[in-house]
Image 1: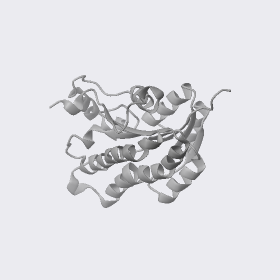
Image 2: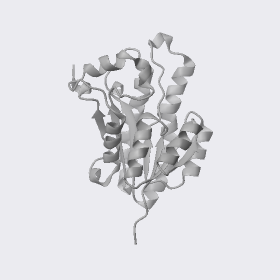
Image 3: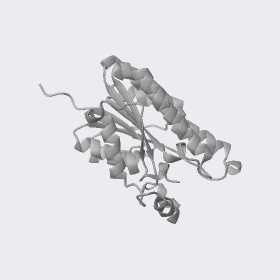
Length: 238
């Protein structure tokens, strides 16, 4: 009897890295669930991946719980959705700060808290959190954003300890400059940041998707509690 396809839930799955992850998982035979706030783009990605779209705002606790309920049992969770408001700390708004904490930290916490125990009860599962090199490397104008992602990396280690004994692995990727729809607004700054890395280049969404798929897949069974730098070597460069 053929095994059932892997069910993968990708937050922020309607564009950029999230969309690339959904497309790759679909090509690999997974049953894909995409979630985001944009219903039009969500329906489009669901169609191209033969998947399912659930509209949800991760900043809303009610939406997070509804998302977990509607998604049901999943084998892979990719906490990819993110929000940033860049600028000096003194100019960071309370609304922007709260949004970064809600989307980058609180939303993934409660979504994982709802889904991981069900993975553990079935004895298998994989969670991949999407972080940033700024979580480990200080950057002016990114204090609150980096702190919110550093909190997500702390959750990665704690969840690995909590869920590994039941067969659920938890890892993260820490991204360097990446070319997405969101980062287009950075203009030449993206290329300047990318040029400072040893490889001198920015990530492409497909490249990041393959790193995430590796951590979620069977070939990475010995790996858990790890934050994989996907940043062209930037994190260790002076």
